[in-house]
Image (cartoon, rainbow, N blue to C red; front, side, top):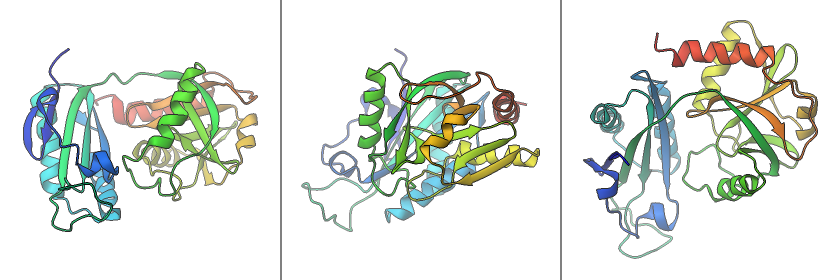
Length: 277
């Protein structure tokens, strides 16, 4: 396997050479946030949006981060890797405790860690499973507290599924690692942002672009049963782009594979953000 370029507390190295203390609060308490920044054809995708979201996540945890320095580290990682397509994973924790303690010492130094890997941006067709949303109540923060996602997605994987669509009290929230969209003949629907939903960058980019081109978009609270009559369902994320759902394991649907409205939305997104033009 090729060496993976990485950075830890602003020191550049390779991923397999970085050593992190077991008393890092990222490890003991998930007291940390992260961001995934994609790039395609050597172009960063919505870089400022990702940096702004990372800053908001840090602010929510009262973490102080030098955003200018962080932005430079991310760009340097990509430059050192010489990769054309890929993404950077960048994580910020409160720091390393002297001994594990719920109450943190205000004098802790923020701990940062990132790496860059190759990634092929390509169309995906997914089989998913509906499940109850088990996660904590601040999913709008891009926290590393992802145990609920991990449990649900691995349960789905054991049933031959690629992803999950979650609901809280029968109200759609999001995918295990994505936002949810569904469509009828002329309108695109997606759950409105709340504490239960991460403000996805791809979600934001797609909504803005298709609205500008006259496609109707409705954001709101949608019952899980409303997707039974959807013509198309897709999931969005920084690494998935737009991934079409073609089957739901535990819900009867009337999905039309490669529905014209999904194809139009995917084409708009690819041409705007992944074509390299």
